[in-house]
Length: 448
Image 1 (cartoon, rainbow, N blue to C red):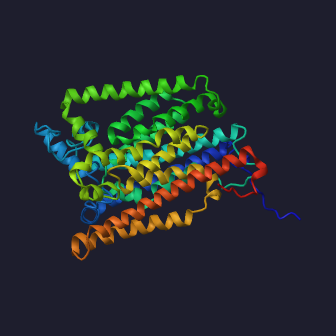
Image 2 (cartoon, rainbow, N blue to C red; image 1 turned 60 degrees about the vertical axis):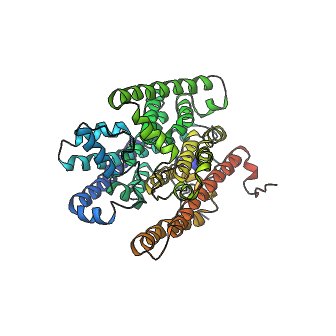
């Protein structure tokens, strides 16, 4: 008996929108981005004292390599002809940021605020464009949907809204963490790759690496995304030409990275490399954060530090190749997984790292129905995020707690991210099985 309700299959939901629908979607995106940017600008302009008092010093939002206060100190030193990267200094951020903010330093503070707000808006728009490109690619490729599948269509404007109105994104912007500009470079690299512009994607990846070191792990999936965009998703199943594409992208990345390195050496000397890359990899500042490194290396004996530095860093870096290879048919998903791994396992993480990972998840709304531990992951993340400020207050301000309290909250937070990554990867594998073997859709998967 007909019910009058129209079901939307996966193929229909990802079909290319008409001109009228595209106009309406563009209008919704403009409203979402405009509202998000105005909210940020209003809070920063109208309530600067509240932001400075309650948020600016939060270790969950700002780290030694993303702190706005340390950036201002570096700009001050540079403006007074004092080398900002000389040994033992407090400035450990990319010379790119130093050059950019040295120019902004000569202007009123409102221009710096506008630069941060524009950067966050750019990330939101870029994620929306990636979503639109992925929807178009899925609608024109065969074998990308499960027969009879019914999915929720997460439009580009919704993707932008979920990023902009995420409290973690908002808090990161309000403290003016420089991780925002790393997000700009990562999002731009993914968009350029999705649009088939591999050279531009490699340049943006090199910029992201100079800003935050770990985005170098995204080079392989970025090369695969650009190859898929230029040759179609089926092209990735054939090895002919694929190695050449990856090698070309890697060569552009290396050339861009090397050119920026030579520029920075000419401007600041080789000390910049020790103060940035070496500082991050060796974890020389053990200020508490929401990661795993600081507490462990506070307690470890000095003779074992080098060994565990290598082990901890390789734990994150070792995922780059296997994740990129296993999900080579969905390279954008591989990049998303690596963004999540970086967020969980980097040496100086903050809540801002998680915000980008969560912002990429709506691109894969077809996986949500396959995820079995979403409730557990959400609760772990909420508990970790909620308990961290409380335990910090008990430890630092009241003195009735200790470092174990705060580190326990960070362990819950990291475990929530790892649970989400595991669930997301399992969901993609199950969906691939359903696509290639539809007869198994109703059968449980049992692993020996």
